[in-house]
Amino acid sequence: MPLVVKHKYRGFNESEIEELGLEAFTMRPARRLMPLEKDELAKLTKSRLLEYRKKALSLENSLAESDYHEQNIKDWDPAYIYFKEDPRWQLTYDLVLHYLA
Image (cartoon, one colour):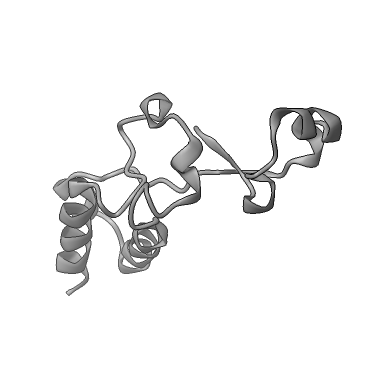
């Protein structure tokens, strides 16, 4: 899973990072969502569907607008959805809304 350096440290050069030490940097995992198949979503309870919807909505809109733009996205697990611009996000979100209706 990719880790992202908090925004306040993004402008630091290599020597400043080395001087502070890696322990000074707070890392957080990138938000991601495992897309579920239609039959998997159909089996979820209403409360679990609401939690899944909330997680889907928590994703950032696009890589360009995110804090992750300095990361190498090719290293990320392609099984997950990381951004709402991913076409799988809209399909998954529409299915969640369908089962909540």
